Length: 252
Length: 252
DNA sequence: GAGTGGTCTAGACCACTGC
DNA sequence: CAGTGGTCTAGACCACTCG
Image (cartoon, rainbow over all chains, first blue to last red; front, top):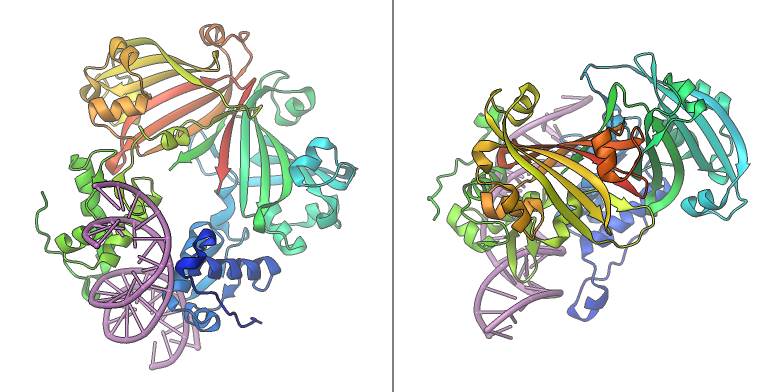
Protein backbone atom coordinates (compact mmCIF):
# COMPACT_ATOMS: atom_id res chain seq x y z
CA UNK A 1 0.00 0.00 0.00
CA UNK A 2 1.38 3.38 0.96
CA UNK A 3 4.58 4.13 2.68
CA UNK A 4 4.03 6.70 5.38
CA UNK A 5 5.39 9.97 4.11
CA UNK A 6 7.44 12.39 6.11
CA UNK A 7 6.82 15.42 3.99
CA UNK A 8 9.21 18.31 4.29
CA UNK A 9 7.15 21.34 5.09
CA UNK A 10 8.30 24.44 3.30
CA UNK A 11 10.34 27.07 5.08
CA UNK A 12 11.80 30.22 3.63
CA UNK A 13 15.29 28.67 3.79
CA UNK A 14 14.44 26.10 1.17
CA UNK A 15 13.23 28.55 -1.42
CA UNK A 16 15.77 27.79 -4.16
CA UNK A 17 14.09 24.44 -4.74
CA UNK A 18 10.69 25.58 -3.55
CA UNK A 19 7.91 23.21 -4.40
CA UNK A 20 4.58 23.60 -2.64
CA UNK A 21 3.17 20.73 -0.65
CA UNK A 22 0.39 20.00 -3.10
CA UNK A 23 2.93 19.47 -5.85
CA UNK A 24 4.80 16.98 -3.73
CA UNK A 25 1.51 15.20 -3.12
CA UNK A 26 0.88 15.30 -6.85
CA UNK A 27 4.28 13.72 -7.40
CA UNK A 28 3.42 10.88 -5.03
CA UNK A 29 0.08 10.24 -6.69
CA UNK A 30 1.78 10.35 -10.10
CA UNK A 31 4.27 7.79 -8.90
CA UNK A 32 1.48 5.47 -7.82
CA UNK A 33 -0.16 5.85 -11.21
CA UNK A 34 3.12 5.09 -12.95
CA UNK A 35 3.66 2.06 -10.71
CA UNK A 36 0.24 0.79 -11.69
CA UNK A 37 -0.98 0.87 -8.09
CA UNK A 38 -4.30 2.07 -9.47
CA UNK A 39 -5.06 1.05 -13.03
CA UNK A 40 -6.90 3.04 -15.74
CA UNK A 41 -10.63 3.08 -15.10
CA UNK A 42 -10.27 2.30 -11.39
CA UNK A 43 -11.05 4.68 -8.56
CA UNK A 44 -8.25 6.08 -6.45
CA UNK A 45 -8.78 6.50 -2.67
CA UNK A 46 -11.06 9.31 -1.54
CA UNK A 47 -9.69 12.76 -0.81
CA UNK A 48 -10.12 12.37 2.92
CA UNK A 49 -8.34 9.03 2.88
CA UNK A 50 -5.41 10.37 0.87
CA UNK A 51 -5.28 13.39 3.17
CA UNK A 52 -4.93 11.25 6.26
CA UNK A 53 -2.37 8.95 4.61
CA UNK A 54 -0.19 11.85 3.56
CA UNK A 55 -0.88 13.76 6.78
CA UNK A 56 -2.04 16.90 5.00
CA UNK A 57 -5.40 18.64 4.83
CA UNK A 58 -8.06 17.60 2.39
CA UNK A 59 -7.69 20.96 0.62
CA UNK A 60 -4.08 20.20 -0.23
CA UNK A 61 -4.91 16.79 -1.69
CA UNK A 62 -7.74 18.46 -3.53
CA UNK A 63 -5.45 20.95 -5.19
CA UNK A 64 -3.10 18.18 -6.29
CA UNK A 65 -5.99 16.24 -7.79
CA UNK A 66 -7.37 19.41 -9.41
CA UNK A 67 -4.17 19.82 -11.38
CA UNK A 68 -4.07 16.20 -12.41
CA UNK A 69 -7.70 16.33 -13.50
CA UNK A 70 -6.97 19.38 -15.64
CA UNK A 71 -4.14 17.40 -17.25
CA UNK A 72 -6.54 14.56 -18.04
CA UNK A 73 -4.72 12.15 -15.77
CA UNK A 74 -7.65 11.76 -13.40
CA UNK A 75 -11.38 12.14 -13.80
CA UNK A 76 -13.59 13.40 -11.00
CA UNK A 77 -17.12 12.09 -10.60
CA UNK A 78 -19.16 13.87 -7.98
CA UNK A 79 -20.69 11.57 -5.43
CA UNK A 80 -18.68 8.59 -6.69
CA UNK A 81 -14.99 9.23 -6.50
CA UNK A 82 -11.91 10.10 -8.54
CA UNK A 83 -10.87 7.72 -11.31
CA UNK A 84 -7.75 7.06 -13.30
CA UNK A 85 -8.35 8.35 -16.83
CA UNK A 86 -8.60 5.64 -19.45
CA UNK A 87 -8.66 5.48 -23.22
CA UNK A 88 -11.40 2.88 -22.84
CA UNK A 89 -13.67 5.73 -21.80
CA UNK A 90 -15.51 6.66 -25.01
CA UNK A 91 -15.39 10.33 -24.01
CA UNK A 92 -11.60 10.22 -24.33
CA UNK A 93 -11.61 8.79 -27.84
CA UNK A 94 -11.47 11.99 -29.85
CA UNK A 95 -8.85 13.61 -27.66
CA UNK A 96 -6.16 12.17 -29.89
CA UNK A 97 -8.04 11.90 -33.15
CA UNK A 98 -8.94 15.37 -34.28
CA UNK A 99 -10.50 14.41 -37.57
CA UNK A 100 -14.11 15.42 -38.16
CA UNK A 101 -16.29 15.16 -41.28
CA UNK A 102 -16.81 18.37 -43.25
CA UNK A 103 -20.50 17.58 -43.43
CA UNK A 104 -20.95 17.34 -39.68
CA UNK A 105 -22.62 13.96 -40.00
CA UNK A 106 -21.99 11.31 -37.38
CA UNK A 107 -19.88 8.48 -38.68
CA UNK A 108 -18.81 5.05 -37.54
CA UNK A 109 -15.10 4.39 -37.37
CA UNK A 110 -13.27 1.23 -38.33
CA UNK A 111 -9.61 0.42 -37.90
CA UNK A 112 -8.07 -2.29 -40.10
CA UNK A 113 -4.55 -3.48 -39.28
CA UNK A 114 -2.61 -4.17 -42.48
CA UNK A 115 0.83 -5.26 -41.39
CA UNK A 116 2.90 -5.72 -38.27
CA UNK A 117 6.59 -6.53 -38.35
CA UNK A 118 9.75 -6.46 -36.25
CA UNK A 119 12.63 -4.18 -37.20
CA UNK A 120 15.65 -2.39 -35.85
CA UNK A 121 15.39 1.29 -34.98
CA UNK A 122 16.90 3.67 -37.48
CA UNK A 123 18.55 6.88 -36.39
CA UNK A 124 15.40 8.94 -36.43
CA UNK A 125 13.09 6.44 -34.73
CA UNK A 126 15.77 5.87 -32.07
CA UNK A 127 16.08 9.58 -31.41
CA UNK A 128 12.36 10.17 -31.14
CA UNK A 129 11.69 7.11 -28.98
CA UNK A 130 14.71 7.56 -26.76
CA UNK A 131 16.33 4.31 -27.93
CA UNK A 132 19.70 3.41 -29.41
CA UNK A 133 19.93 2.84 -33.15
CA UNK A 134 19.54 -0.87 -33.78
CA UNK A 135 17.27 -1.46 -30.77
CA UNK A 136 14.27 -3.63 -31.59
CA UNK A 137 11.10 -1.88 -32.64
CA UNK A 138 7.72 -2.96 -33.92
CA UNK A 139 6.07 -1.34 -36.89
CA UNK A 140 2.36 -1.39 -37.54
CA UNK A 141 0.54 -0.23 -40.62
CA UNK A 142 -3.18 0.24 -40.51
CA UNK A 143 -6.07 1.85 -42.30
CA UNK A 144 -8.77 3.99 -40.70
CA UNK A 145 -12.16 4.15 -42.33
CA UNK A 146 -15.02 6.51 -41.65
CA UNK A 147 -18.40 5.24 -42.78
CA UNK A 148 -16.78 2.57 -44.94
CA UNK A 149 -14.52 5.06 -46.73
CA UNK A 150 -10.73 4.98 -46.21
CA UNK A 151 -9.47 8.24 -44.71
CA UNK A 152 -6.20 7.61 -42.86
CA UNK A 153 -3.15 5.40 -43.37
CA UNK A 154 -0.98 5.13 -40.28
CA UNK A 155 2.52 3.80 -39.83
CA UNK A 156 3.27 3.29 -36.15
CA UNK A 157 6.64 2.72 -34.50
CA UNK A 158 6.79 1.18 -31.04
CA UNK A 159 9.67 0.16 -28.74
CA UNK A 160 10.01 -3.63 -29.14
CA UNK A 161 11.00 -4.04 -25.50
CA UNK A 162 7.67 -2.78 -24.20
CA UNK A 163 5.39 -4.09 -26.93
CA UNK A 164 6.87 -7.54 -27.54
CA UNK A 165 3.81 -9.73 -27.85
CA UNK A 166 2.16 -7.37 -30.31
CA UNK A 167 1.25 -9.05 -33.57
CA UNK A 168 -1.20 -8.77 -36.42
CA UNK A 169 -3.35 -11.41 -34.70
CA UNK A 170 -3.51 -9.47 -31.45
CA UNK A 171 -4.43 -6.35 -33.36
CA UNK A 172 -7.12 -8.15 -35.35
CA UNK A 173 -8.67 -9.72 -32.28
CA UNK A 174 -8.83 -6.44 -30.41
CA UNK A 175 -12.28 -4.87 -30.30
CA UNK A 176 -11.15 -1.63 -28.69
CA UNK A 177 -9.06 1.28 -29.87
CA UNK A 178 -5.31 0.94 -30.21
CA UNK A 179 -4.64 2.98 -27.07
CA UNK A 180 -7.12 0.92 -25.06
CA UNK A 181 -5.26 -2.17 -26.21
CA UNK A 182 -1.94 -0.65 -25.14
CA UNK A 183 -3.42 0.12 -21.74
CA UNK A 184 -4.99 -3.26 -21.16
CA UNK A 185 -2.46 -5.61 -22.72
CA UNK A 186 0.80 -3.74 -22.22
CA UNK A 187 0.16 -1.48 -19.25
CA UNK A 188 1.19 1.58 -21.22
CA UNK A 189 -1.02 4.61 -20.93
CA UNK A 190 -0.59 7.55 -23.34
CA UNK A 191 -1.14 10.80 -21.53
CA UNK A 192 0.12 13.42 -23.95
CA UNK A 193 1.16 13.78 -27.57
CA UNK A 194 2.74 16.23 -29.96
CA UNK A 195 1.65 16.41 -33.57
CA UNK A 196 3.46 18.02 -36.49
CA UNK A 197 1.34 18.67 -39.55
CA UNK A 198 2.40 19.24 -43.11
CA UNK A 199 0.85 19.01 -46.55
CA UNK A 200 2.42 16.42 -48.84
CA UNK A 201 1.79 14.77 -52.19
CA UNK A 202 0.36 11.26 -52.08
CA UNK A 203 2.78 8.47 -52.93
CA UNK A 204 1.54 5.58 -55.02
CA UNK A 205 0.85 3.11 -52.22
CA UNK A 206 -0.97 5.52 -49.93
CA UNK A 207 -2.96 6.93 -52.82
CA UNK A 208 -4.21 3.46 -53.70
CA UNK A 209 -5.14 2.70 -50.11
CA UNK A 210 -7.02 5.97 -49.73
CA UNK A 211 -8.66 5.87 -53.11
CA UNK A 212 -7.17 9.13 -54.36
CA UNK A 213 -4.89 9.81 -57.30
CA UNK A 214 -1.13 9.76 -56.93
CA UNK A 215 0.29 13.21 -56.18
CA UNK A 216 -2.90 14.64 -54.75
CA UNK A 217 -2.46 16.63 -51.53
CA UNK A 218 -2.64 14.75 -48.22
CA UNK A 219 -2.28 15.90 -44.67
CA UNK A 220 0.77 14.37 -43.04
CA UNK A 221 0.42 14.06 -39.28
CA UNK A 222 3.49 13.02 -37.34
CA UNK A 223 2.80 12.17 -33.73
CA UNK A 224 4.98 11.43 -30.73
CA UNK A 225 3.09 10.08 -27.72
CA UNK A 226 4.28 10.12 -24.15
CA UNK A 227 3.43 8.14 -21.06
CA UNK A 228 3.95 9.09 -17.40
CA UNK A 229 7.16 11.00 -16.81
CA UNK A 230 7.13 12.29 -20.38
CA UNK A 231 8.71 9.12 -21.66
CA UNK A 232 8.11 8.76 -25.42
CA UNK A 233 6.57 5.38 -26.25
CA UNK A 234 5.08 5.80 -29.70
CA UNK A 235 6.00 7.49 -32.91
CA UNK A 236 3.63 7.46 -35.84
CA UNK A 237 2.99 9.08 -39.15
CA UNK A 238 -0.46 9.32 -40.58
CA UNK A 239 -1.56 10.41 -44.03
CA UNK A 240 -5.03 11.91 -43.91
CA UNK A 241 -7.27 12.33 -46.91
CA UNK A 242 -8.96 15.68 -46.34
CA UNK A 243 -11.41 15.47 -49.24
CA UNK A 244 -14.37 14.92 -46.91
CA UNK A 245 -12.77 15.52 -43.49
CA UNK A 246 -10.71 18.14 -41.73
CA UNK A 247 -8.41 18.29 -38.75
CA UNK A 248 -10.15 20.35 -36.09
CA UNK A 249 -8.07 22.24 -33.57
CA UNK A 250 -9.17 24.42 -30.72
CA UNK A 251 -6.89 27.30 -29.83
CA UNK A 252 -8.08 27.81 -26.26
CA UNK B 1 -17.00 51.77 -10.95
CA UNK B 2 -18.78 48.74 -9.54
CA UNK B 3 -22.40 48.41 -8.81
CA UNK B 4 -22.89 46.86 -5.40
CA UNK B 5 -23.91 43.27 -5.92
CA UNK B 6 -26.65 41.48 -4.08
CA UNK B 7 -25.56 37.99 -4.85
CA UNK B 8 -28.09 35.22 -4.45
CA UNK B 9 -26.51 32.66 -2.19
CA UNK B 10 -27.18 29.12 -3.23
CA UNK B 11 -29.80 27.04 -1.49
CA UNK B 12 -30.86 23.52 -2.30
CA UNK B 13 -34.17 24.80 -3.67
CA UNK B 14 -32.48 26.54 -6.57
CA UNK B 15 -30.60 23.51 -7.79
CA UNK B 16 -32.13 23.27 -11.28
CA UNK B 17 -30.18 26.41 -12.26
CA UNK B 18 -27.39 25.82 -9.80
CA UNK B 19 -24.36 27.96 -10.39
CA UNK B 20 -21.76 28.27 -7.66
CA UNK B 21 -20.89 31.67 -6.26
CA UNK B 22 -17.46 31.77 -7.83
CA UNK B 23 -18.99 31.34 -11.27
CA UNK B 24 -21.30 34.25 -10.68
CA UNK B 25 -18.27 36.30 -9.64
CA UNK B 26 -16.52 35.11 -12.77
CA UNK B 27 -19.49 36.30 -14.81
CA UNK B 28 -19.28 39.76 -13.25
CA UNK B 29 -15.55 40.03 -13.89
CA UNK B 30 -16.11 38.83 -17.46
CA UNK B 31 -18.72 41.52 -17.92
CA UNK B 32 -16.31 44.20 -16.76
CA UNK B 33 -13.71 42.89 -19.21
CA UNK B 34 -16.24 42.93 -22.02
CA UNK B 35 -17.30 46.47 -21.08
CA UNK B 36 -13.69 47.54 -21.28
CA UNK B 37 -13.65 48.59 -17.63
CA UNK B 38 -10.13 47.18 -17.47
CA UNK B 39 -8.25 47.14 -20.76
CA UNK B 40 -5.76 44.52 -22.02
CA UNK B 41 -2.42 44.86 -20.26
CA UNK B 42 -3.87 46.70 -17.27
CA UNK B 43 -4.14 45.30 -13.75
CA UNK B 44 -7.53 44.46 -12.30
CA UNK B 45 -8.21 45.20 -8.61
CA UNK B 46 -6.56 42.97 -6.04
CA UNK B 47 -8.26 39.83 -4.80
CA UNK B 48 -8.99 41.35 -1.39
CA UNK B 49 -10.50 44.43 -2.97
CA UNK B 50 -12.71 42.40 -5.31
CA UNK B 51 -13.71 40.19 -2.38
CA UNK B 52 -14.90 43.15 -0.32
CA UNK B 53 -16.70 44.73 -3.28
CA UNK B 54 -18.58 41.54 -4.09
CA UNK B 55 -19.01 40.69 -0.39
CA UNK B 56 -17.52 37.25 -0.69
CA UNK B 57 -14.39 35.69 0.72
CA UNK B 58 -11.04 36.07 -0.97
CA UNK B 59 -11.00 32.35 -1.67
CA UNK B 60 -14.10 32.63 -3.80
CA UNK B 61 -12.71 35.49 -5.87
CA UNK B 62 -9.53 33.48 -6.13
CA UNK B 63 -11.32 30.51 -7.62
CA UNK B 64 -13.07 32.72 -10.18
CA UNK B 65 -9.76 34.26 -11.20
CA UNK B 66 -8.12 30.82 -11.29
CA UNK B 67 -10.56 29.69 -13.94
CA UNK B 68 -10.13 32.83 -15.98
CA UNK B 69 -6.36 32.54 -15.79
CA UNK B 70 -6.54 28.97 -17.04
CA UNK B 71 -8.63 30.24 -19.96
CA UNK B 72 -5.96 32.82 -20.80
CA UNK B 73 -8.27 35.73 -20.02
CA UNK B 74 -6.22 36.94 -17.08
CA UNK B 75 -2.56 36.64 -16.16
CA UNK B 76 -1.40 36.42 -12.56
CA UNK B 77 1.91 37.90 -11.50
CA UNK B 78 2.93 37.07 -7.97
CA UNK B 79 3.73 40.11 -5.89
CA UNK B 80 2.34 42.49 -8.52
CA UNK B 81 -1.26 41.76 -9.32
CA UNK B 82 -3.60 40.20 -11.85
CA UNK B 83 -3.59 41.57 -15.39
CA UNK B 84 -5.91 41.46 -18.36
CA UNK B 85 -4.30 39.20 -20.96
CA UNK B 86 -3.11 41.01 -24.08
CA UNK B 87 -1.85 40.05 -27.50
CA UNK B 88 0.75 42.77 -27.08
CA UNK B 89 2.44 40.47 -24.59
CA UNK B 90 5.12 38.69 -26.65
CA UNK B 91 4.52 35.49 -24.68
CA UNK B 92 1.03 35.32 -26.19
CA UNK B 93 2.19 35.63 -29.78
CA UNK B 94 2.54 31.98 -30.68
CA UNK B 95 -0.70 30.96 -29.04
CA UNK B 96 -2.49 31.54 -32.33
CA UNK B 97 0.33 30.91 -34.78
CA UNK B 98 1.36 27.29 -34.48
CA UNK B 99 3.90 27.32 -37.26
CA UNK B 100 7.47 26.35 -36.38
CA UNK B 101 10.51 25.79 -38.58
CA UNK B 102 11.46 22.16 -39.25
CA UNK B 103 15.07 23.05 -38.51
CA UNK B 104 14.34 24.39 -35.06
CA UNK B 105 16.18 27.62 -35.83
CA UNK B 106 14.88 30.89 -34.43
CA UNK B 107 13.41 33.11 -37.09
CA UNK B 108 12.23 36.66 -37.42
CA UNK B 109 8.69 37.16 -38.62
CA UNK B 110 7.40 39.80 -41.00
CA UNK B 111 3.83 40.53 -41.98
CA UNK B 112 3.17 42.37 -45.24
CA UNK B 113 -0.36 43.58 -45.97
CA UNK B 114 -1.16 43.18 -49.66
CA UNK B 115 -4.73 44.38 -50.08
CA UNK B 116 -7.64 45.66 -48.04
CA UNK B 117 -11.08 46.20 -49.47
CA UNK B 118 -14.76 46.62 -48.55
CA UNK B 119 -17.29 44.01 -49.62
CA UNK B 120 -20.68 42.57 -48.81
CA UNK B 121 -20.87 39.35 -46.85
CA UNK B 122 -21.64 36.24 -48.87
CA UNK B 123 -23.70 33.43 -47.44
CA UNK B 124 -20.78 31.60 -45.88
CA UNK B 125 -19.01 34.61 -44.37
CA UNK B 126 -22.33 35.82 -42.96
CA UNK B 127 -23.02 32.46 -41.35
CA UNK B 128 -19.59 32.16 -39.79
CA UNK B 129 -19.48 35.75 -38.54
CA UNK B 130 -23.07 35.84 -37.35
CA UNK B 131 -24.08 38.51 -39.87
CA UNK B 132 -26.79 38.76 -42.51
CA UNK B 133 -25.82 38.16 -46.12
CA UNK B 134 -25.09 41.53 -47.68
CA UNK B 135 -23.83 43.11 -44.45
CA UNK B 136 -20.61 45.09 -44.90
CA UNK B 137 -17.36 43.25 -44.35
CA UNK B 138 -13.70 44.08 -44.78
CA UNK B 139 -11.29 41.72 -46.46
CA UNK B 140 -7.54 41.76 -45.90
CA UNK B 141 -4.94 39.83 -47.80
CA UNK B 142 -1.47 39.58 -46.38
CA UNK B 143 1.77 37.67 -46.62
CA UNK B 144 3.72 36.25 -43.72
CA UNK B 145 7.44 35.77 -44.08
CA UNK B 146 9.85 33.84 -41.86
CA UNK B 147 13.47 34.88 -42.21
CA UNK B 148 12.71 36.73 -45.46
CA UNK B 149 11.00 33.71 -47.04
CA UNK B 150 7.26 33.74 -47.77
CA UNK B 151 5.44 31.03 -45.85
CA UNK B 152 1.80 32.02 -45.38
CA UNK B 153 -0.84 33.82 -47.43
CA UNK B 154 -3.85 34.89 -45.40
CA UNK B 155 -7.25 36.12 -46.47
CA UNK B 156 -9.06 37.66 -43.53
CA UNK B 157 -12.77 38.54 -43.28
CA UNK B 158 -13.91 41.04 -40.64
CA UNK B 159 -17.31 42.55 -39.77
CA UNK B 160 -17.33 46.02 -41.39
CA UNK B 161 -19.37 47.45 -38.52
CA UNK B 162 -16.67 46.81 -35.95
CA UNK B 163 -13.59 47.35 -38.09
CA UNK B 164 -14.64 50.37 -40.15
CA UNK B 165 -11.54 52.54 -40.14
CA UNK B 166 -9.34 49.64 -41.12
CA UNK B 167 -7.36 50.30 -44.28
CA UNK B 168 -4.16 49.32 -46.01
CA UNK B 169 -2.53 52.44 -44.57
CA UNK B 170 -3.50 51.58 -41.01
CA UNK B 171 -2.16 48.07 -41.52
CA UNK B 172 1.09 49.32 -43.01
CA UNK B 173 1.69 51.82 -40.23
CA UNK B 174 1.11 49.25 -37.50
CA UNK B 175 4.27 47.97 -35.88
CA UNK B 176 2.54 45.31 -33.79
CA UNK B 177 0.78 42.07 -34.61
CA UNK B 178 -2.65 42.10 -36.18
CA UNK B 179 -4.36 41.07 -32.96
CA UNK B 180 -2.53 43.77 -31.01
CA UNK B 181 -3.81 46.28 -33.55
CA UNK B 182 -7.36 44.97 -33.17
CA UNK B 183 -7.04 45.32 -29.39
CA UNK B 184 -5.58 48.80 -29.39
CA UNK B 185 -7.38 50.46 -32.29
CA UNK B 186 -10.73 48.66 -32.30
CA UNK B 187 -11.16 47.43 -28.74
CA UNK B 188 -11.65 43.87 -29.94
CA UNK B 189 -9.79 41.15 -28.07
CA UNK B 190 -9.60 37.62 -29.52
CA UNK B 191 -9.80 35.09 -26.74
CA UNK B 192 -10.36 31.80 -28.52
CA UNK B 193 -10.23 30.34 -32.02
CA UNK B 194 -11.11 27.19 -33.92
CA UNK B 195 -8.97 26.02 -36.80
CA UNK B 196 -9.86 23.53 -39.51
CA UNK B 197 -6.94 22.10 -41.42
CA UNK B 198 -6.86 20.43 -44.80
CA UNK B 199 -4.31 19.69 -47.50
CA UNK B 200 -4.99 21.40 -50.82
CA UNK B 201 -3.26 22.00 -54.15
CA UNK B 202 -1.76 25.46 -54.65
CA UNK B 203 -3.68 27.76 -56.98
CA UNK B 204 -1.72 29.95 -59.38
CA UNK B 205 -1.79 33.15 -57.36
CA UNK B 206 -0.89 31.64 -54.00
CA UNK B 207 1.82 29.52 -55.60
CA UNK B 208 3.44 32.64 -57.03
CA UNK B 209 3.27 34.48 -53.73
CA UNK B 210 4.77 31.57 -51.81
CA UNK B 211 7.37 30.72 -54.42
CA UNK B 212 6.17 27.19 -55.02
CA UNK B 213 4.88 25.54 -58.16
CA UNK B 214 1.21 25.50 -59.01
CA UNK B 215 -0.53 22.38 -57.76
CA UNK B 216 1.98 21.61 -55.04
CA UNK B 217 0.48 20.65 -51.68
CA UNK B 218 -0.28 23.44 -49.21
CA UNK B 219 -1.77 23.37 -45.74
CA UNK B 220 -5.11 25.18 -45.69
CA UNK B 221 -5.92 26.62 -42.26
CA UNK B 222 -9.38 28.03 -41.77
CA UNK B 223 -9.80 29.95 -38.55
CA UNK B 224 -12.79 31.43 -36.76
CA UNK B 225 -11.85 33.72 -33.85
CA UNK B 226 -14.09 34.68 -30.97
CA UNK B 227 -14.14 37.55 -28.52
CA UNK B 228 -15.82 37.70 -25.09
CA UNK B 229 -19.14 35.89 -24.98
CA UNK B 230 -18.06 33.59 -27.81
CA UNK B 231 -19.03 36.17 -30.41
CA UNK B 232 -17.27 35.41 -33.73
CA UNK B 233 -15.38 38.45 -35.01
CA UNK B 234 -12.91 37.10 -37.53
CA UNK B 235 -12.87 34.48 -40.20
CA UNK B 236 -9.71 33.77 -42.12
CA UNK B 237 -8.17 31.28 -44.42
CA UNK B 238 -4.43 30.80 -44.59
CA UNK B 239 -2.39 28.78 -47.04
CA UNK B 240 0.80 27.54 -45.40
CA UNK B 241 3.83 26.36 -47.29
CA UNK B 242 5.10 23.40 -45.28
CA UNK B 243 8.33 22.87 -47.19
CA UNK B 244 10.44 24.24 -44.34
CA UNK B 245 7.85 24.60 -41.57
CA UNK B 246 5.22 22.54 -39.83
CA UNK B 247 2.10 23.17 -37.81
CA UNK B 248 2.82 22.09 -34.25
CA UNK B 249 -0.02 20.93 -32.06
CA UNK B 250 0.04 19.76 -28.49
CA UNK B 251 -2.54 17.15 -27.54
CA UNK B 252 -2.57 17.80 -23.80
C1' DG C 1 7.76 47.57 4.97
C1' DA C 2 3.43 47.52 2.57
C1' DG C 3 0.89 45.24 -0.81
C1' DT C 4 0.19 41.52 -3.94
C1' DG C 5 -0.62 36.73 -5.15
C1' DG C 6 0.35 31.67 -3.33
C1' DT C 7 -0.10 27.99 0.14
C1' DC C 8 -2.14 25.49 3.88
C1' DT C 9 -5.40 24.51 7.33
C1' DA C 10 -9.93 23.38 9.68
C1' DG C 11 -14.55 23.28 9.66
C1' DA C 12 -19.28 23.85 7.94
C1' DC C 13 -22.41 22.88 4.68
C1' DC C 14 -24.27 21.56 -0.21
C1' DA C 15 -24.89 18.34 -4.26
C1' DC C 16 -24.70 13.90 -6.12
C1' DT C 17 -24.54 8.67 -6.09
C1' DG C 18 -25.86 4.35 -4.69
C1' DC C 19 -27.26 1.13 -1.25
C1' DC D 1 -28.67 6.90 4.90
C1' DA D 2 -23.49 7.07 4.45
C1' DG D 3 -19.87 8.38 1.51
C1' DT D 4 -18.07 10.97 -2.17
C1' DG D 5 -16.67 15.27 -4.43
C1' DG D 6 -17.93 20.55 -4.56
C1' DT D 7 -18.37 25.10 -2.39
C1' DC D 8 -17.49 28.70 0.89
C1' DT D 9 -15.42 30.80 4.72
C1' DA D 10 -11.79 32.79 7.92
C1' DG D 11 -7.39 33.10 9.31
C1' DA D 12 -2.37 32.33 9.36
C1' DC D 13 1.67 32.45 7.10
C1' DC D 14 4.98 32.33 2.88
C1' DA D 15 6.99 34.23 -1.56
C1' DC D 16 7.54 37.92 -4.54
C1' DT D 17 7.84 42.94 -6.12
C1' DC D 18 8.73 47.56 -5.55
C1' DG D 19 9.65 51.83 -3.51
